[in-house]
Image (cartoon, rainbow, N blue to C red; front, top):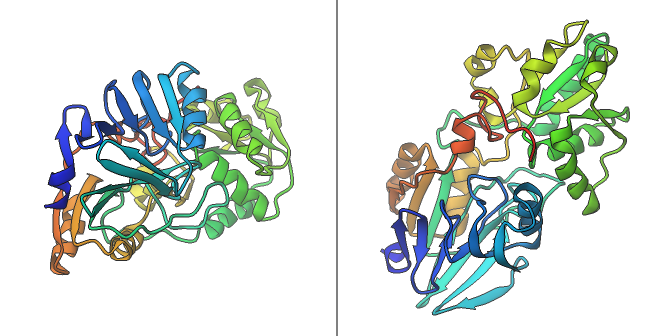
Length: 350
């Protein structure tokens, strides 16, 4: 097995002994390679962190500038020799700076996908298939029932609702890193030019995104006590704040939530979401299958998500496929803090 020759599953996560590094480790380690800035993958306390420049910047915003003793930036497509292994980062399309990690060792190529999506997203570099012998893929939406609709059409539902309910403030729950900025871009590309009100916990990351050249139009800080005056406006907030903000409006604000899990209507009903928007930053079933085929791999490992169906699908096509049981990833999501779980809430201040 190609993966077994290169990677070992340890208590801290995936470890490459040939290069003496860990990928998205769960606890502080001497050398960590980080796929992206979500906190179930990017944790502070490592001695050295290697990541894309954008991921390093995001980690500094979320964890503080001293999140690691030392850091090294690696741009997409650059190759770095670590021990006997070579590593390079390639766009994953998940959020700004997100990367697949390619490890080359003894003539074999292994790709660790991290989280990824194939849908167009103006806020980050698009996913690039990387040919490999072994592909380690996420499977957040690894069931055939999950087929994400066009995000522009979902955004259109929000703008149509504003026309139908012009007296009601529309409070939109969106994860602070990635989803909020993508939603802002989608709303603006649909022609909406009114000010959009931002919860404070979304502000710093949104400023960073805007600093990369993205235009989000006029954004105003949300003052919660003024919410009753915002009938007909759009408010973006982390999901953790959705319920409390909805109780403040005099004209019964409309609760909106943007997540791939809004495909499961029972989740929306449980949380009292009136307008579920199926907008995901993870690949759906079709794009997971397409990405596996595009990789050209003959060995597949499936992790953090619904692995069984995808493993079976790959085995039926002659691949050596099996689940990879990584613990600790998606915990933000399970606790309601990730952009793809509705759970109890999403995180507040970054």
